[in-house]
Amino acid sequence: MAGHGVFEFIERLRFEDRQENFDFNSAAHSPTDDSWFVQRFRAGLTWKSSADFSLQVQLQDVREWGSERPKVPFILGAEGNDALDLRIASVTWGDPKKTPVVFTLGRQVLSFGEERLVGPGDWNNFARTFDAGKLTWSIVPGKTTATLYRQQRGPTSRARNLGDGWKFDHSSSNDIFSGVYVTTKLDQASVLDGYLLWRDKKDNNPIYNAPTTAIPAPARTAAAYDIGQDVFTLGTRFLAPPKEGEFDSEFEGAWQWGHCQPPDHHRGGLVCWQYSHVGSASVGHPQLGRLYAQRLARQIALRRRIQRRVPATPTALTTRTDLS
Image (cartoon, rainbow, N blue to C red; front, side, top):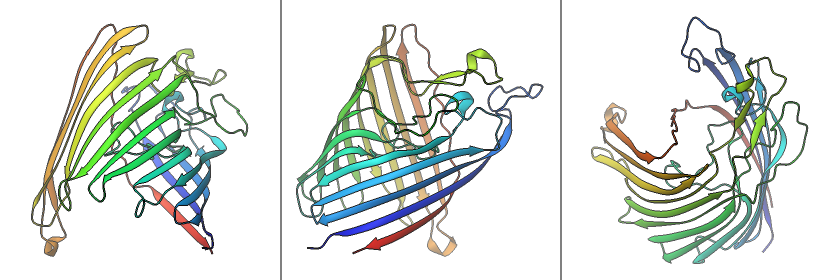
């Protein structure tokens, strides 16, 4: 069988305008009270030498234009600049349609459920990929699937300092994330998931820096992710997708336990439930519903804020070229 390749080019440009959402003080001006563009370009190749072997490579370049914020990711919430980087480089053995086991090794995207806990975070301009090994096993073909993975956390962005030049990012062996995710189809549409996750992060790195920026010194550094931790997460998710003229629903609950630096006991939970009703096609499929989310936590000497933002739909241009 001859090989088959697909080139893919993706360009996304997004405009943002934010006012008083950082210091919440209309009498003061912050570099975040501004308008700007964030731009992202991706170029990739997927090559299938046979039905059960494929190779995927993707480069990415991201920029932030016209803002007062430092062009370093995470500083004052900036998207920042990240010159051409290796976003994906992985090989896959197996065919999900024909073989019970599929294994992917290398830098790849991991996404589970609604991405509340594990996902690429694609609204973020540079998004997230993982250096990982992922094994997917179809326990009951077409019905029950188990996914096991172990990875070094990252990469997010290698541009950790103001003026960083072109260089590929790398993950850290000090941040290991592993888990098992089981998905079962209850019927043609409804899905029940269960998962157990573990994260072992030895320190608070990486730290992003903009030391010469004209902003207060405490704001010139930022941590990309959480502090050092040794935390387990046990959870479940149920999804009944929308159907015309019927109710749909989704539920997800998770519980975490473990330790965080310096060191502190960590206990926390998440419950999210939503339901809605999809109207008739004759009136444009209106969907009315309600979302309920609750975070329950008990922590010793540790306080964290959780923020959730609902993204607008970005503008994207995608071009694909097939090579046979």
